[in-house]
Each structure stands twice: as C-alpha cells, then as structure tokens.
Image (cartoon, rainbow, N blue to C red; front, side, top):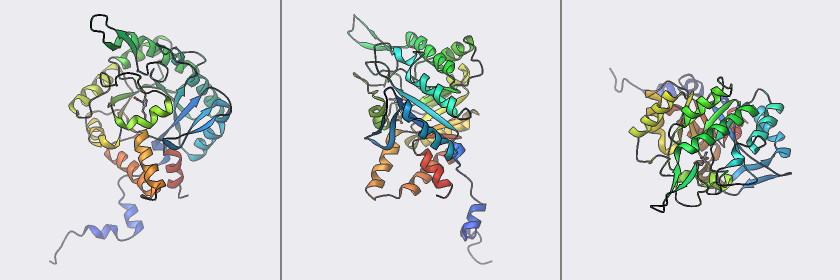
Length: 331
Ligand code: PBG
C-alpha cells in the first residue's frame, strides 16, 4: 500500500467538499447584539474607543432596531447610560429608567425581538461599583456590601421585567444574585422570565472600552472582590454550579477570547445553554488593527466567532453581530 494511507487533504480539495465536512456553522441566530441607550434627544454618538458602536437616545433608536431585525439577529442586550447617578444606583430601578423606557420602545417596534436587560448597578452608582458601599469605621475600608446590593438588583430586575424584558441578565457578580433575582421575579409574577447569568465573569482589562461607553469605571479600587481572578478555572466551575443550583436558565463566560478553555469546561460540565461574551476590547482591538490595514476584519471576526462557537458557545454576545450577520449572508 502506498504511503500515506490517511490523506486529510482529500476532503479539503474543493469548496463544496469542505462545506460538507464543516463541523461548526455560524448563523445570525447565534448572536446577541449589545446596544447602549441614553436619555436626551437627537443623540447618535459614536463611542471613541469602539468605532461603529454608538450611544442612542430613544428618538434615534428605531433605525438601529430596524437594522437588527433586517439582519436576522434575534436578540439585543440593552445597556443604559443614565442621566444621573447616586450612591445606591436609583436610576437602575426607576420605572422610567433608561433601560425600562428603551425596553418598552423596542417591544413596541419589534415585538418578536428578544430584549435582554443587563442587570447591574455600576453604570448607575456615582462610585461605579456593581453594588452598594459599606464604609467600615474601624478599618476605614470601603467594601462592596453583598446582601444589601441584592435587594437593589432584585428591584432592578423586576422593573426590567415589568417594562417587558424577555430575559434578565445579571452581571454584578454578588454572591447569591441568581437566587435573589429568581425569588424576586417569581414573587412579582414573572416566574416565566428566564435568567441569563453572567456566571463566570472575570476581573478583566478587556472591559476598558465598555467602561468608557457606559461611564462605569469604578471611582476607587477595582472589581477584584467580586469578579473572578483570571488565573482560576476550578473556581469557575463553582460559580457556574452555584448559579445552576440557584435557578439560572443560561450560563455565561466573559470575556471570551482569553477564556475559551473555561468556556469549554463549563460546556462539558453543565447542560444549560451557554453564552460567550465577546467583550469590548476584543472588539476594539480588531477594529484598530483593521483600520490600520493590519488584518482583514471580516475574516478575523468570522474566524473568532467560529472559534467561540466551536469551543462551546451556543450564543455569542458581540458588537460585531450586525456586520457578521451581513457577511454570513454573503454581502
Ligand atoms: C456591568 C458590565 C460590564 C460589561 C458588561 N456588563 C463591565 C464591567 O463589569 O466592568 C463589560 C462588557 C464589555 O466589555 O463589552 N457590570
């Protein structure tokens, strides 16, 4: 017998053969598109560190929602940039808060579009943390106070569900947040609203551009007492398990690119739908390199998103969603 017997190139010979043996097929159904909404009028302002991503006031939002629907992407994730901030993030759970208002609008314009509300306090607190602060008079230390924060997150989630959000996506990383929000939603009559938990969320430098966009940079300290250490993966399993036991409907790993091993391990250990968050700096790095002509944006984005799906993502939250959907249609 002639050597080699195994010739892997046989199945790579033509585009049609390659298509037949393709293992991972990306579609626009895989994407969740994040949108930043803000108070005010006539605002469509590009975020400098995220070319192609904008803040929208509600009177300028409709064309963007139309574009989402036209693209075939089925869901959006709403982030609010509120008019005012305070120590307890009141505008996060205001009936007329920006995400609540935007949710009502989007559900009116496109009832079939799945609206996911990010449930956190960091964009709404004047100190920029995801929970409330407790100043310990003995140590002089300021700590993020877990349990009092839960009550505010529950109020936020309930007000978002009341506004019509289809999925609640808590991203705050307080202990017990899934259970608290599940109980709060049930009690308010929203027992059928699922929770997409940011289960495994790392204290990452890859959120930099998002914090410019959401004006949510912590004013002191960092998020390391609640978000995870990038060095840890066994702890990620504990985070995911806690959320499953607390009633999460979907799990998430965030960021995605530097954590594909974590994504894979969550996938192998849990059967819930799994979401990867292709975060802001992952987006901005590609945009910067592409703007310099150093990479082919389309090819790099589709390869990256395919990699996330191959690693185990059932869904991908990505700022590239509309472009990727267009490229997948062959435009
Ligand atoms: C809120 C939140 C953040 C992101 C999503 N929700 C920022 C953070 O935790 O600092 C980051 C998203 C991105 O970088 O694209 N807690």
